[in-house]
Length: 479
Image 1 (tube, rainbow, N blue to C red):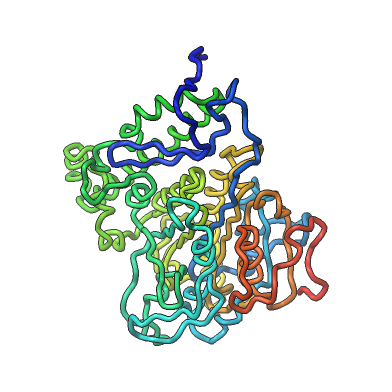
Image 2: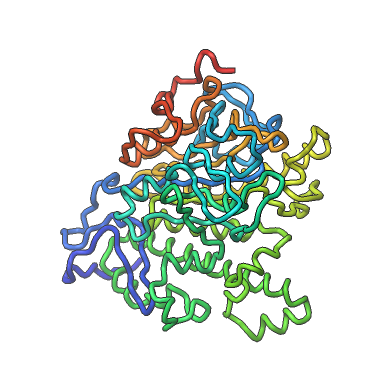
């Protein structure tokens, strides 16, 4: 253990600290030691800990028979699709019978996707004159509290924007590429490149390219400043900084490996070996071209997890408190044959026609999505913050804009909510509400916990009851 004494001769630093280097501005986790006080006295563990809010969208609905848990309240039993959450059962709420009334138009996917976070009905168009009917819940929060963080919000995904017209329903495919709306006519663009998403958090001058994200780790750029900071904080904060830097480095390495792997898929095995050796750390070429991203038909698990790690780091450093992630655009045709037991694409199998072989594969795809959600929750749950964890101070929604993908049904949507929102959510329950309870009631409840008040949101009738009451199991008329 180092015997070096903290240096208190420097100006007092904030508990939310930034490290700056050449082209890098790096936010840090909450630090509990305050230099300038004798003995590096600790601030109250619960002080200044914000609440985060995330929304993870899954296209094409679910196999409803494999989704619903058995039982209600705290004694529920996870369904086959929800089994990846077994170790996190006490951290989640399974919410049943919520719906989006404004999406009940008979349309296929686009109304359900475009209005998932707004609770409104999109205007039918075949052009670029988009109109969602409202501002999405994430952007309502960002417009109120986004000034408190370097990034007001962070929008992520894996599919590029889809253009053209879906002639089956007469809607522009642009609607299926967005869930976040800053105004009723302005969708918020999502970042689909893990390297660029990472750079958005930590690199401040990509425009002039004084340093290259391929050539230097963000940690190398702030090395000297991080050493000085480390000498000024408590031993506990030194360990926290070490853990954080190690996590950032690990994500960087995985992004580099994934980019090289994808480069190899494009070039062919023999050429790839030579090119990877030649290019070395030039890791972003493949990701910088959205056209190549759209060509991917293989296992995209790592791409998804890199994006979820970016969200985790963004919340951990308080770079933003609001984020969305799209597992795919509406009508996603991604091929899931990389999963054992699956032979075909997501959208194709969601139109199961009640055929057992399709329903089984559909459920396996749903389970894969839940597994990725569990991956993010584990990241949040393993990150200490104050006297709790990052997950304790978060609200993470996972869901879809329709229930059964075969019928495009907007009733009884699949909705999961994880995290305790600073202790104001009583998790570990399956709550069955009355039929056609507005999904927007959940959003209203989440906004209040973000200290954002709204008089109206979509078809909401108020806040969702029972979220704070551990004895609440559902409503008497619930089916």
